[in-house]
Length: 562
Image (cartoon, rainbow, N blue to C red):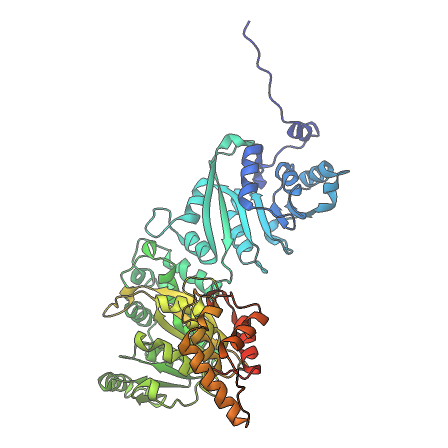
């Protein structure tokens, strides 16, 4: 007789079945039974002993028990009261029971507490709303390691031009970095699902992108209605135009403005797309930067109807006209008289002409009037002096949204230790909060420049830091002469010591004091650095607080950099 194979049984699942608990497919209950897959997921999550971990759909607790061994606390959200009771029973009488909190109910309707990580084999039918509930949760968590249906996971990581690239791809990649970790076969579950699975890691972007997600989602929803059609075709659909016109009228009514008699929403939409050279672009080939560009620099500036806006280098007025629609007044500074005349001609005979003031001349030599905002695609060769002319202008403005060469923008936001961290980074961050908003490709300009660009938002610190900026700039100039050298080496250069000694003598003469016979500037400088434990420090690793301490120490000893 043939040998009868004994049926392999899992003790926990056998116990569940013995009690008459059957897995409910309506809740997507497919229990992950392979311990190797569970171990791999936990390793990818890099759990710390101080972490609070959120698990969605713990089932019988195979993964929950393994997580409890590694972390401080597990918050398990389970919709099925039978499985919640089984999980509670599984840890009862062990030290783990005090580390487990069970939330019973629908995850999508549950108010989430704080957590560091999310690890879950989730019900596949709620994958999409679950992702955005997690990514829009505040405060931000560190990362999530989640099991999804294979095709859904492939959509999450799809790139522009891929067959599976869709609205889900764009929206998820806006909010998080997404990585595919591993594939998981059907036989690793009980009961086996009908589809293959994959594990994905989501790491929320911190800080989050400075964009209204509801606005962004509305835009991508329309763009991907027919992702193979051009944007011009997608936005010509009657239902879309009616919705946009309704929103536009509501927007105007909130600002106590009326719509023009000959207003045509289709023309307005087509004009915007043509200005961005996107009328013939298809959603399937657009990346995050393209969608961000459509939402426009103007949204970032949050223009109010009472604002006076400064624009530097308006050119032919593509952006100027859009700003004039939203604000009280635009002050446009243009060095080229031909372009200034073209801009004046463009608004002549319209209500906008009374809201536009044109200053003709070099911006760096122009005395600036009062303004609330600055919005500009600036000439890249004057980027550095332009920034400090703006940030040292009084009274302070609210914010500036500026287009820079990509590398220059990266220097503005660089942190200590970064390759591009430099004197520009320190000086700008002393005076303002700096945020990178979006990248802009060469093909968005006419003629295209030789370099890539980025948009940056500057928000001046109010009140300004209590420091003499010329003194500060003098110190950082010397410190970053050779940013990879120690401060002791940077301040031993003869030219530096001569300049410091000259300033020191001038400082003493103003106080009617004389310099000592055996005075040695190098010794004085080295003593100050050693007192601060900064002799071997390098400028590339110093933050604002370090430079502030150094400046105060030098000034208190009568050494000035102005």
